[in-house]
Length: 313
Image 1 (cartoon, rainbow, N blue to C red):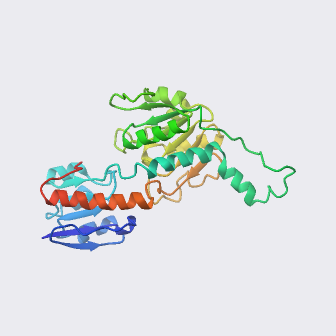
Image 2: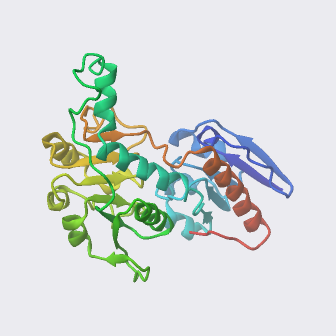
Image 3: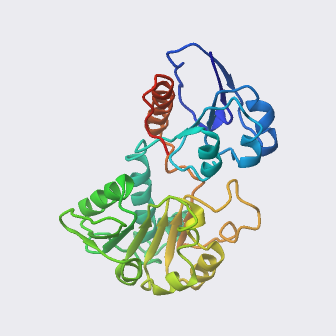
């Protein structure tokens, strides 16, 4: 009988059905890295959203056979150590193809239309003392007619492109593979950064993509351009971004940071600027997306236990 341990159950606010095979199940609301070995002792299946599962811990867990990641990203799991020990790793794919793209467009619209600045003005009582029916203290732009650059053209990138097109945006994208979608211009990253009015990141975090957007790349972006990141915080050099945001040359909407929960000294946390919006890693977290994730999580576990594994990394 399999023993299943969910290390960070509170990260998933959805109903998780019981797998259709004999098992024992244990939930932990949250787990520190130094608690992993103790809590997974004797477990054959571990479920983790963001709890790190590193080589040193895996070496002490001889019974572990499957890590079911309750997310798409697997940078919290030492995949090389898993392969060496014969531990299967399965992740969740394409569960948030509505939630994340909608959040991306929300950030774009809020920044283009200066919603944060106008909301602040209303809260400060400025509308009540206005000499006219409206306040026009901040520039307002449209998405229509601008160029949206998608960095990473997977399921999420394609959906963001479709929404952007519905708003009248011209679409360009970078991808390791050829893009054949009509109306999408494929560009190298530097060229995309130079020409896009909005750049939206949709890549996993790896050693190849870490800090792929640094001071040089930010310097390539057009004045007034927006950088949207709902993927992974580690894709962007946050200190370099904070510096350029302070100048007002570009704007940014972020839902992720390099360390989560963030350290108090993260430079992006201190910013109080109309050209920057930071949300706390919630782009994925609509009720519908979380329930889809929960269902896919158990589907992965059942498929592996039944000898037909799916979504292996």
